[in-house]
Length: 290
Image 1 (cartoon, helix red, strand yellow):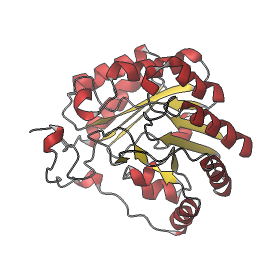
Image 2 (cartoon, rainbow, N blue to C red):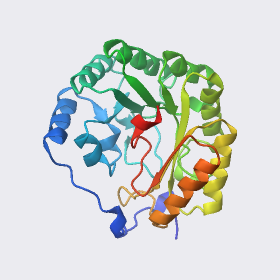
Image 3 (cartoon, one colour):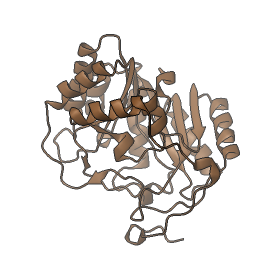
Image 4 (cartoon, helix red, strand yellow):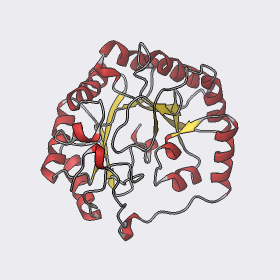
């Protein structure tokens, strides 16, 4: 199968039964959709075509995406818009904090697009967002799913020093497939980003990866070893699903039994939490990981 980015117009495969998902519905889902739209916010739930949207929104949770909805990178797996982003909207902080308050959230996940167009790649905006959300929502716990900031420790520490309980940065895939799957991110820079968080001893380090892109089980286990070596404590593993015909095709649908085996191996290797399943995404059941 040709996985080159120039030839990604592949017919999307029929999903196995274990990947069937519930359609969004119900009052809680509609209420959250209305609040998010009214406050002109973005969520990775929608932008990333997350299969757990119905479950999470039905339970009153969402993963907010800051710094706009246009990413400066164009990864082969990601459904987020790519191109030239709009200028930073500092009013977004107030709208986000207000939305979190209205949703009465006790735990919140925040992520962002990559902003390689900014001098600090968005690090200061990240820090201000965390501080402002915590100020306006006393007692809330936060997970921040951050970009790599090109591995620059001084920028990562801006986020760390703002005080989120969890800082996550996704490896996304195994070393061999990283150049194919990710447009600019490097495997070792991602490890360095997680290591910087771990060495701070201030926020819990977390990462996530997709399977079904052509990796071997041995490569998945090696990625686990690499993550544990830099101090990662929480790991999520989920099935890659092709968002559109313009994205990388699925190489294989991993069985639920294999996901269970990955979870067993990960826990044996010392991860505090391993969420591993076909529909697992990086923020799935995130409140359990604090």
